[in-house]
Image (tube, rainbow, N blue to C red; front, side, top):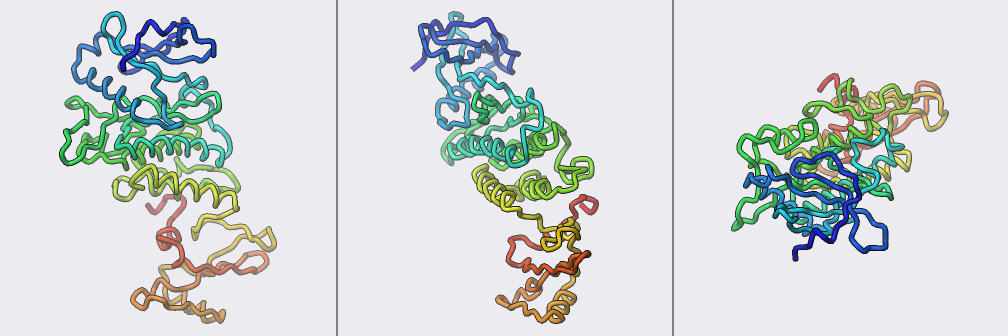
Length: 368
């Protein structure tokens, strides 16, 4: 049921104009709890545009249908004295992410904040909503520092086979932010936009948060310029984040996590690995010796050299058990030896999903 704008008292603070409306800080008339809210009223010139009006109305429907602690909560909606639609949402006192100082904390602390964003987007995906406009200005944080996903004005609903298409986008309009939008959305291929488009944008957001606000075009997050943790003596945590981003910031949507829900699960695993002192599985990434603590492990073989793998295994008296005869090349031991004390580490990369890609990847991005 529509509300009454007279229920809301303006407090004299106005926010910067949003894409569709004017925003004011308000409180509920007669309320004693001191809670603040944000009132957004659609501007007259926007209201006269049928597509923009439909978009505003759709944002009301979407916010009203979503109930998640990481999604901006709709408190009220209706029309003002001039017949212009308005919405009232909860006030996030820390403001939008693009106004905060970076970094927000350690890698793990940042990942936990980021996980909140992903959980909000995952809830939207579960309800059949694709955000399409994830960027720092549309991520808010409340007084508890909880990440809140807002501004669903460019979202659309995933339609069933018998439903109409609710992708409200004007002709020639690119419905996404330049630096954070998925390639298929930025190129105007709206028929190709799936929840994986939001996953791409989330990946760009995570890189932005950990890089101190750096933006880049398309998917070159592993380039020398965009390397996370550049200059640090120990980049293990950042390299593990790059492995996560390999499944988020890709040109092909099918190579990404297909929903934010899958991204949330990957984040849980990543935080567990970092807290356990885990290391990225990369040939050219230096691994400090766990025995003497001074030297670095040097790999004696690579997965591309099958003969050498078996030869070294036999030299050390090891046997690589063949479980699937048709896939013999996958079964070998990786051997790393400390260049200081000679301590050896042995690995079975065939036990790691997509292990060949992980073991052969060039962390500097110089080989693509």
